[in-house]
Image 1 (cartoon, helix red, strand yellow):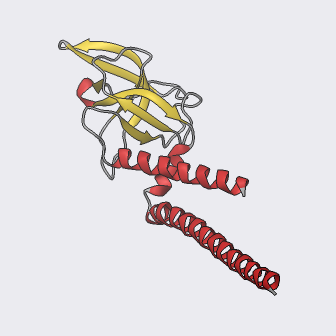
Image 2: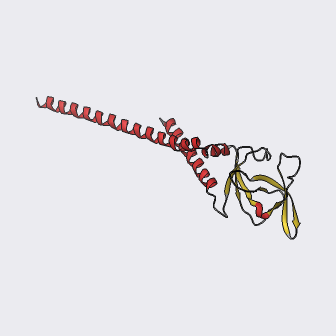
Image 3: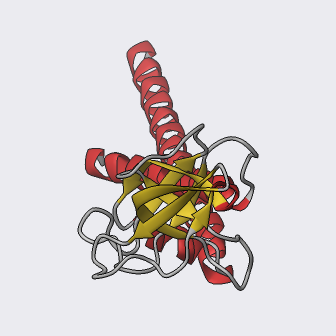
Length: 184
């Protein structure tokens, strides 16, 4: 039973973590950090496909920083690449980016206004779980699995209480019988 309890809390904790990350990625807080799933291998081996990357806007970006940039919409996904070079055009910084696994820099220069943020941390492969949770069947699992775990745990507690009550009644009857036998 100890293994079941450990497994129970690990699964529940993982589901809560995924739910929290899902909420953060769906409802980003302006000016704060955002979480994205890396969909390609362009940043391998530094950032694996399926990883999550947490980014936060910074005052400035320099060569070597990993940034996420682009539009966020249902049809467009932002890109996470490393700043290869910073140039100044008309007094404004312009960033040349490149994926670590790519042979050449990106064709398009990035303006500061297009940058969503700088990488704070990544968690390998957790993006697969978050992407699954964003789908209807995945979201249902986030609700159904914890509900089933709670129902099973409560059912076990109810069964244990029933057994305890029955044993107390048996002990009470035997005690009463022994009291009667002593009186005779």
